[in-house]
Amino acid sequence: MQRIFAFSMILLACAGMFLAGCESLNGPDAAVDEAATITESFEASTLDGEASILKSAGVIVDSANAFLTLRWSEESGRFQSDNTVKGHAAAVAFEKPTTLRDRNALGLDMGEVSVLNGTNQFDLPKLTNTLFGVRYGKFGGPRGPKGGMGGPRGGHGGPRDSLFAIVNIPFIGGSTYQFNITGSDKVAAMKLDIKAPAQLVQIAGLANKDTIDATQDLTITWQGDATTNTVLVLAPARKHGRFGRGQPVQPIFQRVDAGALSYTISTQTLQDLLNQSTAKAFSLHLSQSVVNEIIDATLGKILVSAGTDDQVLLTVK
Image 1 (cartoon, one colour):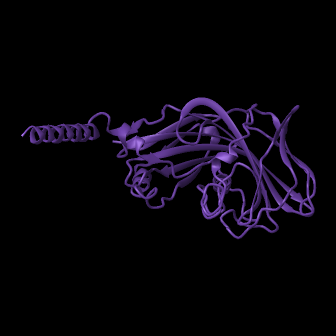
Image 2: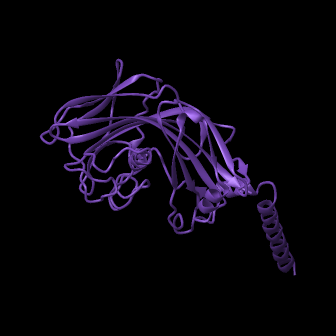
Image 3: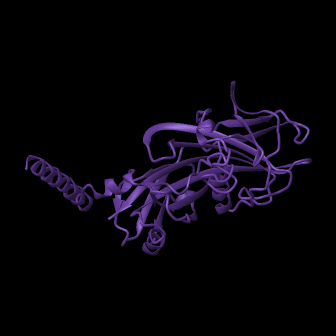
């Protein structure tokens, strides 16, 4: 009898905890619980994410033979608002113009690649793999922002992203940064300059994990460099699944007027966004970029860009 009574008490305790959990999901902590179970579906910090941003800004990226990028953000890329500015760089060159999603395109050996700013030099990690060739710095896999077969974050022998976050390049607004390429038998030695935006872009009026009403238009405001290419990215969030991250979702890219300092997202757009995912949340990215296009006699078109990003995760009531 004592065992039966004890077992019954355990069941009652478990039931109590279950009911408490159900109450929290329907109470004021519901938005926090929702945010804790999801992951971002877009990362501006990847090379493929950068290419998508530039393409949305009107830059013809598919005819480029090389991409060299610098990006800064106060976000870590996983919605951790620690107010620490983090900068990263990436570089890749191809034998012929190709899209970054072409998993058969192999990156060329460019020797050593570093980023110079004044007297400071930041050497980019050189990564070689039989599936994606040679690439430098931090970037996503050839098949998408999160990597894929053989991609830097994917499986099948691809190195993980943690290996790419070694170099943190400080942000100096309006400063000139230089990519220094030592060259190889495939790529000539060269030095390419890019000027950083005057200031970091910052979303105003919205904080990370704020809750919004998706039945009404959402107006966002920001501070930043009014002379840059500015793109708004709305990415449906994905719940952490038992066997992965759920079905694929498609971010919405919208070029906006940097000088306007505000943009209104329609209710219909919000609904279209949320219909892609079971998670009642989405990430809002704002990216500003400066782009230089260089034509090299041997390599072809090179795109050099420097940009800043800000993002918030918004839950929906």
